[in-house]
Amino acid sequence: MIIEPGHMTIAGWRDLRDGTPATLDPATAPRIAESAAAVTRILAQHTPVYGINTGFGKLASVRIDDADLTALQRNIVLSHAAGVGEPMPVPIARLMMGLKLASLARGASGVRPATVALLEAMLHQHLVPVVPAQGSVGASGDLAPLAHMTAAMIGVGEIFVKGERRPAEAALAAAGLAPIELGPKEGLALLNGTQFSCAYALHALIEAERLYRSALVTGILSTEAAKGSDAPFDARIHELRGHKGQIETAAALRELMEGSAIRASHRVDDLRVQDPYCLRCQPQVMGAVLDLLRQAATTLAIEANGVSDNPLIFAETDEALSGGNFHAEPVAFAADMIALALCEIGSLSERRIAMLVDPALSGLPAFLTPEPGLNSGFMIPQVTAAALVSENKQRAMPASVDSIPTSANQEDHVSMAAHGARRLEAMAANVDAILGIELLAGAQGCDFHAGLASSAPIEAVRGRLRAAVPTLRGDRHMAPDMEAAIALVRSGALVAALDLPGLAP
Image (cartoon, rainbow, N blue to C red; front, side, top):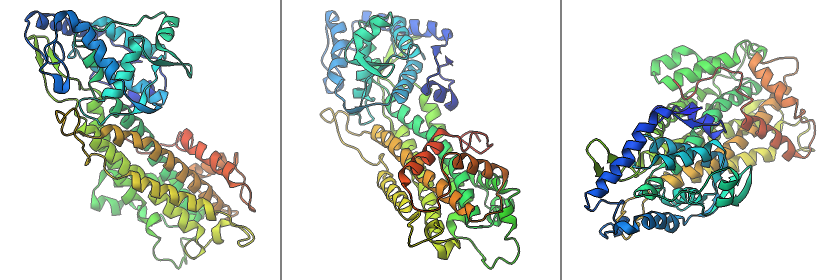
């Protein structure tokens, strides 16, 4: 794939995350070279310019001699590589590298072509720096994690090579690359920026789209198991309210139920007047989720294509303007929106599971087992789903409302975007598990309607599940069944062949 700075799509970032070999658009070369030349011209003016010939943060008033400029850039990398915790997952770290590469290639960062070329080569050859995932507050850039990324470029730290951690200098050498000596402004340009936070948020956004779609499928499976009505999905209801996500979600749910013999079996003489909210209000809840994810996608698409380091170099006037594009408040807000969406997808799913195991609500045998009492059936999988929902509720507290001063109060308001985005990975994994449990429960419920088939797409989903997990006829070791169902959800196989709404309106 070609990385086109300023014009990348969410789908393009997904492909890069997933390992598609990437190179930078050659048309960016003149802009990169001119930006670096502007730094040289600015230095020749012999005036103090933040980050080029001064200290950093609270030390910005300290003037640095020309002879020490190379050491200044190396020092900022080594001193700022102070992250802790487990390394970033390789796909997300790879996405971070691509985001940084695209930002530098906009030609506003003053980085030399050779430095950009090394980052591009590392990305292309799947040399991914080992980056501890904790240590950024999401302002003044994601300094610590990006410093670890940059340290690998100067031969310090470690690099993942085919899943193994190797010393950075040795890994570069084995790939025919050499560590770089950073020039003026380059260390700061590489460290400043929101690419760590943005990578985690983009990753979560992509996963949330898959989970939204998967929840439509498991939701209809549960609706069929409970012999719920498709009347609440009638287009006329949703057109009157007007929300785009709700309208599209209702249409998708109608299509998923179309042709169901289970639905047809209870159109006449069904004594129930209304279904529980977890069935009836799926368009309203999941439609709102879709609208929220699309808002987050708009913000993150802009951020991913922008320039967020400091100072910014304007080559046409030889100016270095110091601002605050490194402040990740937009990413923090987007991450909070994704957290809310993930929380609600899981919450509604768990309510459907709880409804199915309750015979008073579902009309099915207690806990979805043919012999309740002797067998516990789905009693504890529902408890597990409830536990995961509560974990996600605790994690869904907005991170963006938190702030803590850093750098001797020079950086006195921070976004917490890094934390806000990083927590999303665990939240998405919880939703994978909740939907996996609902997949099992919904299929088990439909099995009690022997002789009646659901719609073609839902029967295809049941078939995929039953190829791995047989019907539960008596208690057995539940964990392997759950692992298989969760893997099916996580793989995207539930929705791969379906035309369902997503981030693109």
